Image (tube, rainbow over all chains, first blue to last red):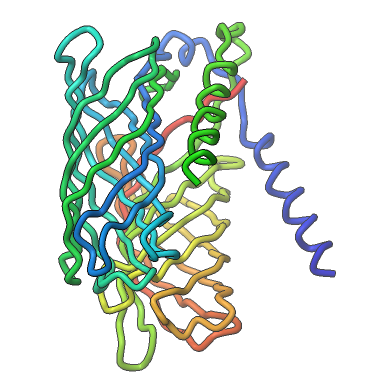
Length: 177
Length: 172
């Protein structure tokens, strides 16, 4: 019976993907715009936990609202350091400016929620800042290296961080209304 | 472990590159109304303990008012770091007056962590809210509701404040 409910629910959800769609009007087509997005796959080190270095693995998604400024979403989970179950999700704003043709300076500030894995994160509210460099080694593919600081204001956990990984930049179409 | 991570990263990036293709005819593009929401909500996790969560949800409209979507929250105050909620929702966003909206929603999902008394973790959370539209595509909304962990010991009235923005999701 439960399986039947799940199948019916899945069918309903899939059908709604089709039902809500409509073709773009001529006005829509003339107003289509492009914006940059960037996806990062990162490995991040926490240097000062009460049991030594811990590591998290995760993802940042940047959606640009100007040529150099973006809204970012981040989600990470623990992968090393006896902290299984720890996770953090955050939103924030960032800036990305070219230094040379291939090298970019990038900085972001995030607010979010995290905890688990026995880390002293208090109520879970997290503040993180980070800045670093992105090097474009293939067209639209970058190597990222950033350093920063993470603090849980309602807990005792605060630590310098270092993250590195790869990112991919592309443009997506959107309607500005 | 490192080799697995490296292979995973290479696989993900190769798919991003391989998936690139020229844009087909633009007239085939379709749009669907979506709404992205950031929300703070609070409720009592026990008779003596309050918790506040921060999260986001995305509504996908199936017509002008009915929608479904997904939502996720994490604790930001109290002493339950690591407490999370995630799930799907369905609701109706209606118009009371030119700039005044109301929202009736049912959230169904899973939650727990932070040593909370969540039992099996299954959540049901109906809400009703009153919103105000501003700057064309933004909406601020105050919501009240009731959260119940079906196989746990958390049952409480909820209060939430959220801000939303509309956008069109484009698909071929």
